[in-house]
Each structure stands twice: as structure tokens, then as C-alpha cells.
Image (cartoon, rainbow, N blue to C red):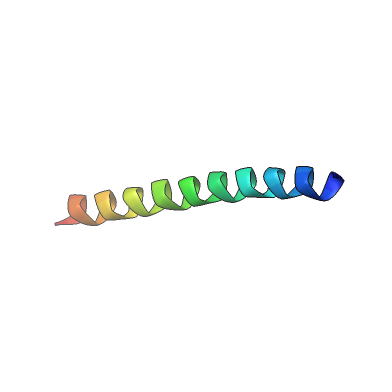
Amino acid sequence: GPADIYKSVADIRDAESLGKVREYKKQLKAAAKAKD
């Protein structure tokens, strides 16, 4: 039903958010290393 569709969309959105957070953390680590 519609709820299932919404859930899958939410899951995809969560996955995208996780990916962005991971990329952001990677950049922070790289920046920290560059400072050293």
C-alpha cells in the first residue's frame, strides 16, 4: 500500500543522508590530517 511506498522512499532518503554524513566526516578527517 501507500505506506510501503513511503517507507521505501524514506529508506532511500536515510541512505543518502548517511552517505552525506560519511562524506562530511571523511572531509573533516582529511582536513585534520592536512593541518598536521
